[in-house]
Image (tube, rainbow, N blue to C red):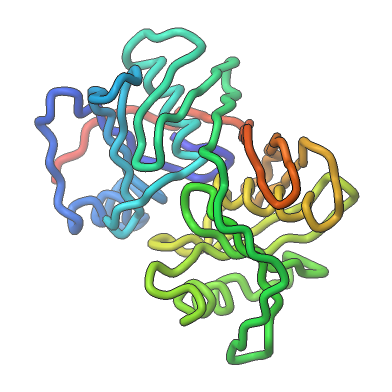
Length: 260
């Protein structure tokens, strides 16, 4: 499946029969030697009161706390796999996620963001950078640039991802360009993946930080590298965000079996 170009392998593991190693997950997600994906998601039975549960892994096989695009794809996958309705909930490491499915478009809630930090200056090999940070289930740094297509996403993104300022967990890195008030474009360097065509939690962090810095109302539109426009809705009081919702497409690519 893919959500705005951010793609995932989804596995029905309600019977607990699948147990892949980190190396096997990385093999499946390899774009030349496997299926090819930005991450892998298991469908699991819930344990704490939600309808379902997930386990999410990055493309390198590492654990991931949250993924907005993955969550929207997962909601449609649940609906397709279990015959569920248009609303459902599932358990993640970050808490229970609720989804509203409207055809190929899915809206999910995100847990309340934490750790807003604005206008921090950090040194890099090329220059000192102004960085804003927000944790939307996973940590995100946001840099505003004049032209996002000219941004050094791979090189500078990797450097900031491993920067001492964000140690030990590191951070995802978003490069954002303001198009018009209330509308931005974002490219994201993601931990365990590299640059992706879209990152839901990164879109959300970038949209909320842009709104905070420019006093924009909710929602904010965000264009991503995959060509889609996503919507980030929220409530804001001072430096605190709540009631965050992410809306965008979630599409099936193919269904099949693979031998590993």
